[in-house]
Length: 342
Image 1 (cartoon, rainbow, N blue to C red):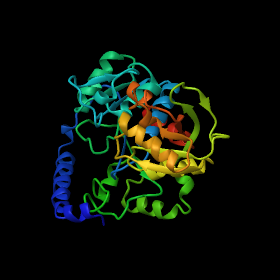
Image 2 (image 1 turned 90 degrees about the horizontal axis):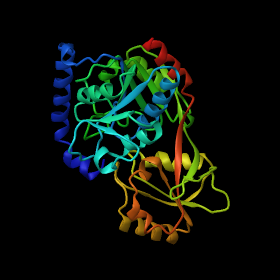
Image 3 (image 1 turned 90 degrees about the vertical axis):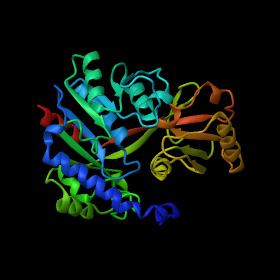
Image 4 (image 1 turned 30 degrees about the vertical axis):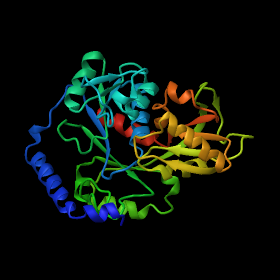
């Protein structure tokens, strides 16, 4: 146990009591959850840290759109400081206002496809007002946001980290007790290529879950894009030697492992706290560290790249490439979601 978790241990019973009381209130009074005029699909998780909600939400948003279900994504916009709330996120929005993940999604999905707001109901109304053709909404990181009614609750579980030590914050990684699994309509297990035996997860879901299906998906780094020019290139990068990898994710080790699975070696890594990244001065220090560890180029994630601006470009000396992540094996999940909506 880390020293911070040890010091915060007395808060765990209090946190658990608050979560229990809040869930009990919503269970007893379902009318508290506000309904909107189109179906809502929530993509969330039980634990803190990165489980892959953002790439999964993007996959569903693109797939549903292609299947004839125009949609928009609603996000809390964690880390964003904005004067207007809710706020529509466009490709040229400022990540300091929107947060990094909503801007990443907007750049992938396009105009009027992402809205951030502290109150997801208000964000939903904003999305519907600017896109009257919407047939559904995707609620990003929405499992704990019970104030907005959802028609489907997809619970995402990292197949490698799973449920950690099974304890609630701050002693463990769980935001809610495992009994909350009963609210989820389906379980989506990610990073399944690194899950040698699935039976333990299946037994966990059978013991605590709702009886809904389990879907097994993976994340693949499909290629690289040079940050300053946008030029695409295959992964692994040929003829450049090992990379220096850095990121600001909830689960940075997953990114470094994915690089190795894609055949890309790295000489060193640096991890920032989730949603954080380097200042221009920090990027200088990263480049110095990369050189000291024998790397001639750097690689980060799409989530990290959206936080970089002209100030970073002015100090960039080493080539910087962005690793593009995609969902693999999600077709059955997409077909099931479409079938539930129809």
